[in-house]
Length: 316
Image 1 (cartoon, rainbow, N blue to C red):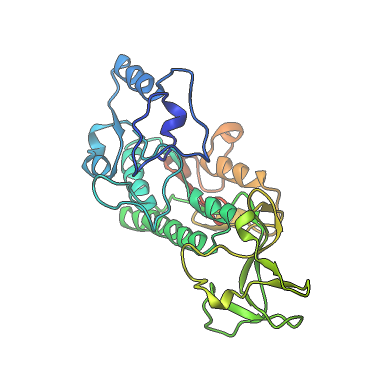
Image 2 (tube, rainbow, N blue to C red; image 1 turned 90 degrees about the vertical axis):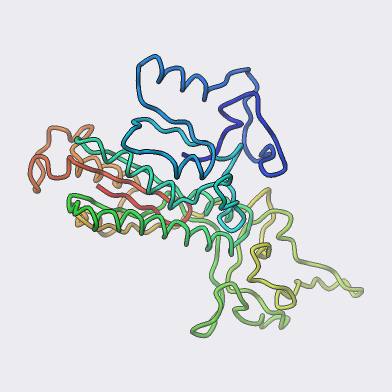
């Protein structure tokens, strides 16, 4: 489930609510891959559903379908604050997570589900810290859906892992007082007295340019306290201009709970996460490996939720 219709199909229905996404690639070879997907499932006699909006998702009978393809946007999904939440609109990350679990949980051998809060990354690339925070909150809601399901179903064989594949160039500045708005002012420059926000980026696009020159040739930085820095449309100031805000090179955190969660500790290379999940679920190179929790305890489920540029969640 997600966006990407223009990458799958050549012929698109474009409108003001879902125009062509210029930040995504576009298929131009005449192929219609969603139709190819449907034809493949029909030829195999499989039970399937192609979804295009929230109404389709909420009406889906998970007990009567084995394959689901949900394409809810031509390009990237909309930010949560701007999406149409009506039945004709785009479902939330939480709604997609809930339905995906219901469909996949029918498999007696277990499953792996990966849920990506990808719009966190999109917001950071554009320099919109408030949007990134809001998308992180939406990801948190999706994590809660999974946690609630584990508790309600009694699936104690579920490992939940939350991590990220990279950081961003977002910086936390100054010494703001306790309780300050994270999107507000962090302090005053001791060089020129101009306020600065708690959140800025080290890199950004041309909209992050906030400098002017007065009649004396003195370069002045724009005063962020004179605008609403808490707005979804506020563009954070950045030190270096480029085509967009770039990824960072810092370490990311990994949160885990459930069986085998103890294997996540200290500092590891990123591929270690995949190995722990494979070992926990006894799949891939670890399919014949005996774990400390018995031969099939974790074989029933591995659920993975990933939020790029922020946090990721995995369950098993």
